[in-house]
Length: 304
Image (tube, rainbow, N blue to C red; front, side, top):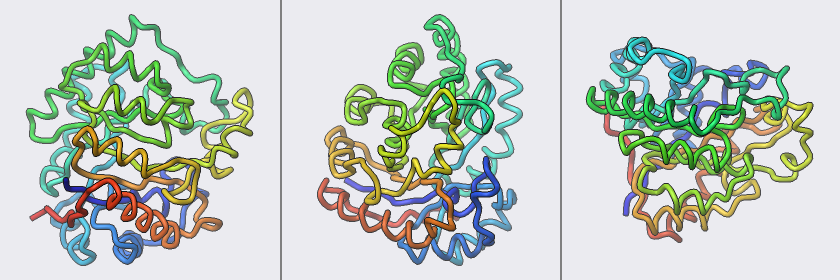
């Protein structure tokens, strides 16, 4: 089985909290990711949207686009409006031969609002999730038909956060809605990271290998502290530096036949967690667990 290793630029610059950003250029970010051994990177705010500009920059560092966040509003919005909103990113990603667009539902989310405690997140009834699941399935099918599939990101402080919420979304959506599995977000939400793989492996199309520091998470006062407060305190880190057993996680994904990208996404304060050093720690641990799980790590450069 084959795996590709990517990383997200959120370790270098955080799009939700500017103070958690290193003052480095896109080129320096790519250089450090390449030095650490990664061949893919998800997009972020410093990426040019013109493939003719972006392509040569990526080529210089041996990096390909391995995904990237889209702030979806389909929960409360109109599917035709969402098609218009995603189209520019879709065209860029098709030109860069990216595997998928990461769909994050930002309608009703409090993930970027430091004034909103974790306990105040929006909660949907099963009937609301049923309606939402139908909309997301239709949107996912449309995106795939355009040649650029989405992968749905369950996320702390968003409407689909917990294991039961994800179970309901998967129950009330079709195979046209692929799933991004994020170990760190699921652990933070109190879910069983291996059970989620067992239940939903047929839908998993993309993987974020986010680690957590459970000591930080367990000490949070969710009635007072926000998602971004948790990030600032160091709730997230790279594989090999936190509480999760990535050998068990990757072996479980392998047992169900998952092949594709494993992307390190670990937002931290770059002053206390230097991005290059952390990227090297994460890459080393992923190489170890990939070998243990029987994966062959291949280069991820696919764009023209």
